[in-house]
Image (cartoon, rainbow, N blue to C red):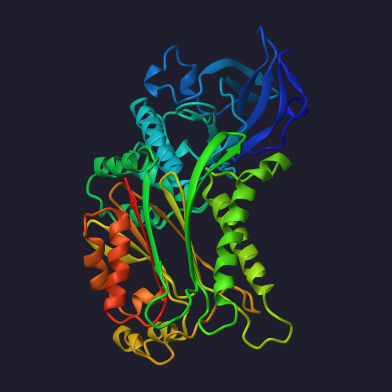
Length: 474
């Protein structure tokens, strides 16, 4: 687009009332400017859409464009300034969908796509060109539905709604963001036409927007076992409420750490790791707000960063237990799940495990950080051979060791009826996935099922400490 005329630059005043504050977005066809309208009883934010005066007429300038729907920012005024057509639009927002979102999470993305579906449908009925709709022309505004279209509304032949929505979907996913594996799988099915009709796609999106508050019942059982004299496993369940500028946020943490067998201070390492993890999360989630840098609990990436920072603190705390020159420093595994509304953030180091039981199927959510698992991944061992391999417990990373760690991080969306299992390797060395699936299918409460898992592992001959945490969601 041609350079901006002085009459449309920051600070300029148009028609004696619209003071331009900044450029919101610009491309080869149009420019969007944020301006303050001082012509009314109180100042209001406006978006100015500027295009060359010889551009195709905007349908907003017709006498009635009701068919374009309320998601199009309404036309407040129309001007011509230095060869530019200027449409003054009623939209109170300073960010577009092309800007990094302050609250990028899965329900938010699903909501945006549903709103875009309504917008595109309205524009198509008005005979507007859907190719004109881009992320940079969609402004985030307070309240519902949260978006306003501020781009040109011109007649055109591009009226294929599913194709336009798919284009905007892919543009959104190309933006920086952290998304659950559930959402990524849904998008892949959508891209490859595996979801059925377009209405089926919308049904799936609506399900992702459903209210996310879940109630968790947790059962936790830990036993030193029949061989070891002390229990080096540690486990916790913590429910917290953090106060932020957006109000109170409730979150819960379930975590398991297994002190490295045979190492001095394994029990101390596992307990310290969990204490540090929980303390760090609580501090970052609440007290940091006093210093003006509290995390955004509604942003997936922010929560992941918070969780990784807490794991790093735990790693350094455990490393601090080592004596100078000690060959085998204390250490531990860590498998932890942070639940915020329906979003389940998982972090993992070592060979403890987390499983998800859903709809009669059992899914292992973690990968063992062991030498043997690397051989399985490389095709040198079968999973059955790995279970009896003499190096089965040789870890490739653990908290407290004098090397950097690379925690596995996962994000899932949970549903009522889901059941989670966190367990130490004392469970999985004696119970295979089939046995665990049968135990977790038991409809009894979480506490009873956790007790049954530990009892089954001991009965099957486990030679290690055994810990099971069962978490039921409703």
